[in-house]
Length: 592
Image (cartoon, rainbow, N blue to C red):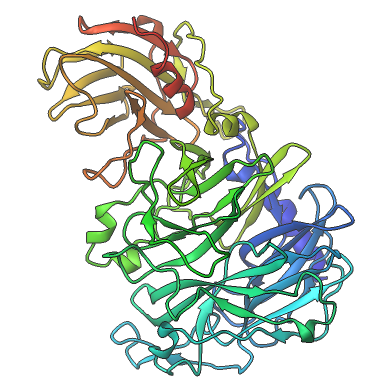
């Protein structure tokens, strides 16, 4: 009966959305992974019988509610259908949460997760967040344990096994002096030089923003890849010393959800979230025993990569290149917000990807990161999608994600990924045409049919000065003009609705040719600017460099009728939204 409920919910949530043009980036087009209600951390490994084995935290209530437990599901058709879920831990036992998987050479698969073995119902929390001094959400503490499957996820070991954690400074400073440990886990376990490694995120206390301090460690087993007796598996906690992977010097107290990638030279790359407005990273050159000082993430051109307090994972693909999932906003606005811990979790829609390639650094290989592309979005801007995984199958790339009550699988356009890895070609200009974002549907209610249309304007200009109000382009319902401070603003007006967005202050200069690509993407309803080959991300001036336009904007006039001002040296129009990589390729073409 329960399985029927799973299948009914999956069918409902996978049903096509009427009156909308398909866009594979829209998460509602993904394939639903069945759950009970809550759905978190849908992580996948491929089994020896070629199935996908997904482990997920689920339960009948919201995150942290009673009945939360860990299940696994198998799919033999790349997520289109799923076999009935198997409970790794029962829903009527203590909370079991946040599992990750490790497959060893024999084909055995281990699941590692939090388990509230002692069935604690409350622990000490900070006032005034918890007025009586106790927090009653108990899914991020207790024992770190594992079970295993030897039949590709059809059944799991009856016994669970504790993994010992060495006390760190953060444990000794918690309200229990480390006798009760606070922690959780995300991402991927991995093998490295004959050993198995499992990430863990230690927590110092509960208060504003839930976790008030955190840092990352690795649990290393020298024999898990070969030892058949789980009781004989041995563990050590890395790094050396009693301080884990923390935020960069001068940053906040949060450094969590560490994601690890093994590089071609044997270095380990780690990226993690902070509350500083930027994700941070570090490298280990000795198997995780020590780590280089943490630094904030940067693009290859040296600019900081913005990110809120949300999961941001990096994966090394089978081709040796990297993909990085993040949300492309933050900066000083999150750092300076008076309630930064609580509010830094917001705005996880859309999802952006950056591509990484290895390069030589002073102490070993490093990763150079591309400028960002939108990979996934939801029409509701408040939806928060997170906790992804990457799966490769026969040359195809898939991402999982969750909104906490729906988890899905999405195939990602290979052309988008090739652009991220530096293989984008400059697109061929098109003759301008009218752009209609929506029309009446053929349904009986005559409602809105979202066409998810878009366009891009590519122009070279030469500004004699930075005086505001100079018209660069103008047409019926559309204009591009200069603003004070070295920016340009795009205005769209259909007679009913007006939307506008500007490039970053200082993004254009006077006295020399300037390249501007303004893109209006009718999928996520986002306007972006790429100026002189740089994606505008807001810098230190704005939390967001990209902006949303109204979903009620019906369209713009014939783009072929655009009139350009005397400072415009060349204008090219595209009747679809260009990707960032394509806009950058246009910048590198010969100038007019």
